[in-house]
Length: 105
Image (tube, rainbow, N blue to C red; front, side, top):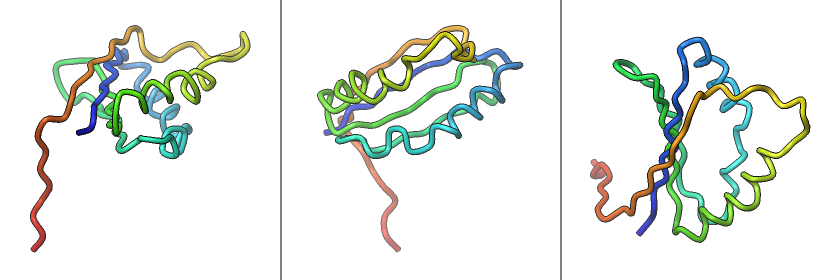
C-alpha cells in the first residue's frame, strides 16, 4: 500500500497569504514525479498556526527519489531567495493500512 508524508509548517498569520501563493505558483512541481499519488495543502481554521502539506506516494523509494531530485533542486538557489514563510516544520510519515472511497451510485 501507499505511504503518506505530512509536512507540518508553522506559519504565522501574517505569512499565510505568502505561503499559499508560493504553493499556488508551484503547481505541477510534484505531479509528474514517478510514484506520486496525491497532494493537498491544508489551511488551519482554528487553534493552530500549522499548515499541513499532505502527499501520498506509491512507496518510500518514490518519495526519496523526489526528495533527492526535483524537490532538492527546487529548494536550492542563489542568495536572492525569499525568506521562508514558515517559522518551523516537521515531517510525519505513515503507511496506509486501510482505505475507502465513496461507493458508486
